[in-house]
Image (cartoon, rainbow, N blue to C red; front, side, top):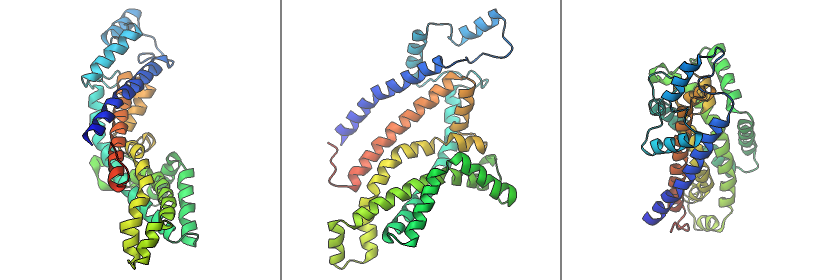
Length: 307
């Protein structure tokens, strides 16, 4: 186990380096710059600003400087958020994104697995068709469409919930963004669970368990569900990273001060350090979560050997 984890961490280094390299040069290739404005600055002032942020150096030298600072955990100062570094914005927004994402993930797992299991146990029934229809609707309608609808209905027309703002973390302010963030994941997880559960329920070891006279609840919960969760677990690696780091759309729509909103603002403003820092943070999170998923996979399925 230790050897497997070590080898995975070592192999993650070149992957992360490729991600950093591609993101760095793509940001520089994109038209415009961090200090481009409709009203141009005097040449001497612009030169001083470029020198202060080391943007007057050759591009390759900027790249190596950035990698060196990144290895020390320094993503650099923000170009647009005055008196803030990229580290301040990322790690300051992460607790909010983590809180929002954790609640959405819990909701997605609870309803997704429950709905998928119920549909599989009643295959080809009205319940099965209803669950799959809802799942396909959730997949087909993106959250940037669903979130405004929820806001319009529950917030504006019915006046049940606030439509924007974090409200110092008040529970009532979290309800709409959590639902908007969780709905697509509920749809995906319910479909994955349903398909996997149908396959597992028709397997030989489930027939054997039923033939031995075990109660249906024990057969489903203790035997079938454990095998059926393997595809869901594979999906949860990148899905969890995406949810926890905060949906860019959801945080922008509901004006939530998380990583996603800072990422959008920084991308529009060509704030290189914040964008790069967010990309690196996101990449590390995905690599870590995929490793955790592999370890959990071996725990759920004894046939899987990591070494």
